[in-house]
Image (cartoon, rainbow, N blue to C red; front, side, top):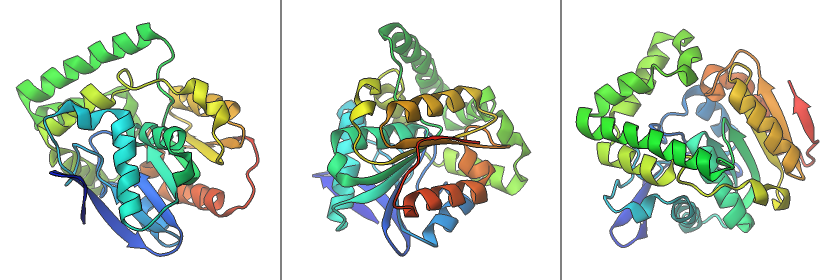
Length: 278
């Protein structure tokens, strides 16, 4: 269903399952329908509210950049959940969606019961790092706008971050690719401009004041985000990190059963133990 956030601007939401509410925020080039088997397992225990982030899936992809700022996007997804009748929910975000979920948690903590992050970060610490990432993303924007979605998808699927996905079943890889190809060039380009890691506010200084339990999850084959997950969990008062074996950046796709079991346990357990779980 499409939920109007403001006049002329709406986000799409896919609802499934029953039980406590769990908001799902996908990664860059993904959609509300890209959670696969992992999403099905979560829907057995929760009412899942999978949102197409602005510029993706069946949500609007406006030309105005104001809709793509992380702070604005965090307010918009919070508004969607409120308009569906949920004042408070669990939130789960993957990669870009994890960064967005973390913005929701820092700006609207009253809306977040528990927070689960997969392959996510708090941003880049230094201005030099952010400037370099903005310049790198500008080259991707140029590729999208000059060569189109298919050429960009060919490139995106070839980067080292997703190397471990080459071992996925052919039908899973085909489904992921088809979802990427359905996105809007304008939406993806503006998402990079407004929601890229270099464009967003760095949230490291806000992690120590997060009041809710947090799970930072990463795939063991994704060394960079494994380190980030452990660092974030160390910085958040009520947090733990879990490293998923035989999985890369999209651990929820590569090891859906193990990831789902880990997250269900975290969301269902009244207590949270800090530390690292291999």
